Amino acid sequence: MIPVWAQVVYLGAAACFVLALKGLSSPKSARAGNLVGAGAALVAVVVTFIVYDLDNLALILGAIALGCVVAVPMSRRVAMTAIPQLVALFNGVGGGAAGLVAYLELASAPTVFPLAASVATVAVGGVAFSGSVVTFLKLQELITTRPVTPPAGPALFAVSLAVTLVLGILLYADGGDGVWLGALLGAVALVVGVLLVLPVGGADVPIVISLLNAFTGMAVAAGGYVLGNALLLVGGTLVGASGSILTRLMAQAMGRSVSSILFGAFKGGSTAGGGEASDRPVRSAGPDDVAIMLAYARRVIVVPGYGLAVAQAQHTIRELVDLLEKRGVEVGYAIHPVAGRMPGHMNVLLAEANVPYEQLLEMDTANGQLRTADVALVVGANDVVNPAARSSPGSPIYGMPILDADHAGAVVFLKRSMRPGFAGIENELLFDQKTTLLFGDAKASLTALVGALKSL
Image 1: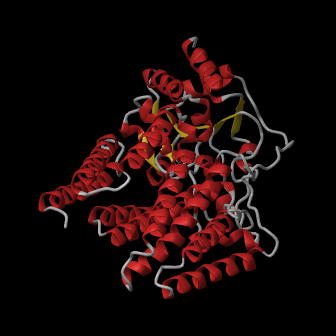
Image 2 (image 1 turned 180 degrees about the horizontal axis):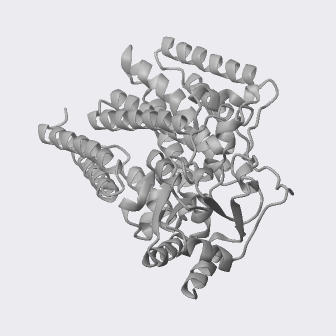
């Protein structure tokens, strides 16, 4: 029986997890929320070591030390553009750990609900682990970002899912004593995770990360139920619920349902990545011409995207905006809900450059201001300003809410090349008469613009 004081501490930690989620909902409080959640987790771990009579303590401490040695340097050195990959890896580790714990508890779990929870956790944890590994490989471009549909993919996925269900029932009927049955269930669940994510196109992978995060949360919650640990139960439920809500919001931001994102490739309707560059004529200009256009505008809306993050140009864009504001130009940043590769990516990136939160405009507000803007300055974004989402029913991104950069008086596109964005489709806005392209690395182009502005 856990001492009362420990249960009170666990309850306090669970409350801190809720406060952490609340803090993470706003850029202003995100850092504090993160610290509150991490502190609560640390306290909970320490209490667990105190109140439980743990076996194999040396192995546990060794595993924690090894995890710290690997994860701390990895987290400190990871580039901002690679955060989604890191999240995918951590998510997979969490799901896999929950599945392993449940597997080890199978034989000792009481019948009915704890045993059912253990069996389900083995399956869900396996799906979360292998699916997260595939999302990491796609985001890191170690495998193709295009949807991969194996021969007879839908049938293969359905059979794998059915086999998982049958194995789960057999394992439950066996009272959890079937060691090899449990291992086989975990192995088939790994296959289900791979088949679930492979058909998803690159632009939709962040949504799948969120979905798998929800899976991991549910697996951890079930693990908490199996182990009789209220903190794991509450923490896992919070992660599962927040991941589910985030998945739904991201799917809405992309204008599609979760089912069409997961299984659209089987019908030829999902997004693809890595298209070819176009050779159609466009209008381009040099930094001096673009600087004049910006300097004599009344209002400029910056649309930051993944290219800005890749170039690490957040400080340079801030310097450019400061120069424009000194000249009396009104400037704001239009943030698409999935700008970059995950929600909040652009907010964190711009926060690094101390961009005031008041200048960050959510999509609805930004679209209202883009109609009256003289210039929309698109930096490394492509799919989130593609008018095809409104006008081309056959386009893979049709229906996705976008930033209406094409409604501004003029559009300046900073692009490295004419290669399509992550969705792999051409952007008609690039060929619009009001659009001017400034080719080059985003940081180099912005640096050149800063120099040109200073010389005016």
